[in-house]
Length: 543
Ligand code: CFM
Image 1 (cartoon, helix red, strand yellow):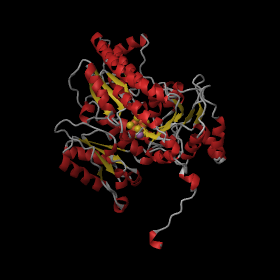
Image 2 (image 1 turned 45 degrees about the vertical axis):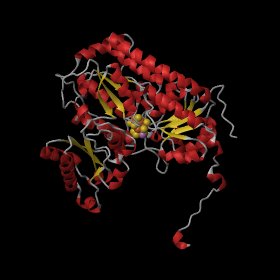
Image 3 (image 1 turned 90 degrees about the vertical axis):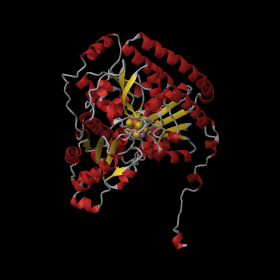
């Protein structure tokens, strides 16, 4: 039996295991890596190194800029053709059939299940690929007659200098639909985070504000940074619907480009994933005066808090009463399951290394069933996602960040909502919080180990040290972790489970954790490399 780490007196100081990790690195690398591993102290507020280049040779969990732009932000939108200009491999791996769900209305376009690519070849690399790109745009238009086409640059396209923006302008003119390009080559930034920023800029410039349609609801909001993994957005739509809150557009789970065009007619923006979409929220406030608030619908408590926050903003007795009614009804159901599961899961340990927001949000769901997060980190978040937005002025702008365009946005004199600015002022005086995110570290326990851009070596050492009951990450980590006898829950694709957002989502998550945390099967796994440290293969052809 593995001896469990004793955390009854608080989390142990992990400095020793950190030293062991560092001892294996060459001095220069250890010096750099050290700044990304932090022993948390919420009272002191420590600084972490984040959003810097991964050291070559290290196996990172990160993805590329193109993945963040095409896959994450634009990918889940169903009525736009997302055309990848590049080799077919980039499209194959960005094919989104696996996880983003969407519900088109009867007869409405849904291109998510397709994969569109220019499939460039060696000859295009030598002689240029713009002609092929134009042909692909015409062909896609001819077959599907979409409302919009987005063109995404991959690494080779940037290297040979194809101009996707001029092609977009020309094709827009020729075909008469909205066509726009993204310079989101994989190498453009240090991770997919750069791709989020590029996507935000493109959507803001080319889509938001294209349709000034009239109001249709009393309380109009947008939900930003919710990508409908495992049907999360469906659960939130159910809650907003019942409360009488009109969700104009979600960026970008279960969404349409059409809805994004009138998103600027909202009264409030809610942000779920701060990392991927805070840029749009900020720009919409500058241009249209729409305030934003950070919420999290991951966890039943967080969901209740978020709904109350919206009700408080609109300050309407009927809405508040409805929201309270929903919370009471849903929480009664949640509590029954939570209590039953917590009795079995209390005291278990979790570790999570995911993306740029889930490593924080899922700690709430775990703590609702008594599971402690001993170590966590993001793949590509920035210091503000760890330490809170108040550190933004002190973040060093390096050459990699400067590489990403920062749009200058001006007030739209016609559409700017002075009434919302006044409302915001008033609420601020009452202590209502806007435009803020406190980050992950202030909410984590003292001595928990926070790591940015963790790698395989560090993962293995930490599993040995903490012996967690569950590890949350993605598909690249899944099997190696499971072979160590620790179950891994994917928080990117949910292992095809979900939804986990909102109240129904919380119930789903508790039950799934009960299954994963309470089975003894993982303790029976013998790590294969303990008995066979070397796997020897041979070619059948030689036998
Ligand atoms: Fe935001 Fe996301 Fe995430 Fe993200 Fe992602 Fe994702 Fe993620 Mo995978 S936008 S930062 S780039 S919540 S794809 S839907 S699950 S790493 S934690």
